[in-house]
Amino acid sequence: MAHKQLSEIMDMAIQFETDASEFYSTAADIAKDPSAKTLLKEFAAIELKHKQKLESFNLDEIADEHHTIPKTHDLHVSDYLVDKEVTPDSTSQDIMVHAMKREQKAYEFYARMLKVVTSDDVRSLFEELAEEELEHKEKIEIEYDDVVCKEN
Image (tube, rainbow, N blue to C red; front, side, top):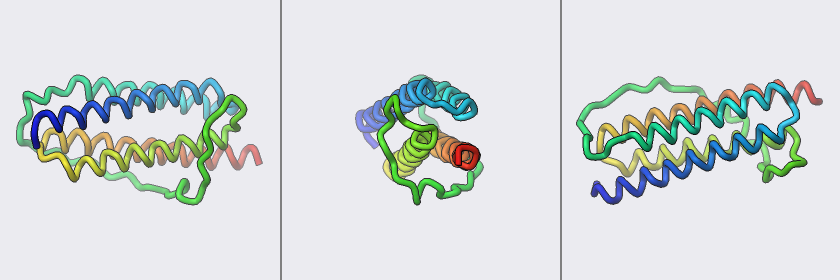
């Protein structure tokens, strides 16, 4: 893959993580449930670390090595939920559904990029980030179950 194309993909990934961090920060301010608020703040920080990891990745020093990434189980809770835009009036449930959908999209983004990139180093990075996004989704799904059951 041409260096320019790979650089553009990395830029897209960095923007994706920036947007995610900003979303979680804003959502944490809106969320009323304390545990949801804490989880959202945690994810804002994690997405910022993803951004930093991508920014610090040196495309000029790509080597051919492969890493094994552990697999996370997708609970598929969000598959059956309708996403709503988050507003200051959003409930914790609305925020959690939107967050699950965002994490699913992030996972799908990295999974698609894995089909495009040819560098083993970049593939390893994207595999790791895809798996982390799926982990986030799983945590949100578990929190959603706790929050929704508590509110209802």
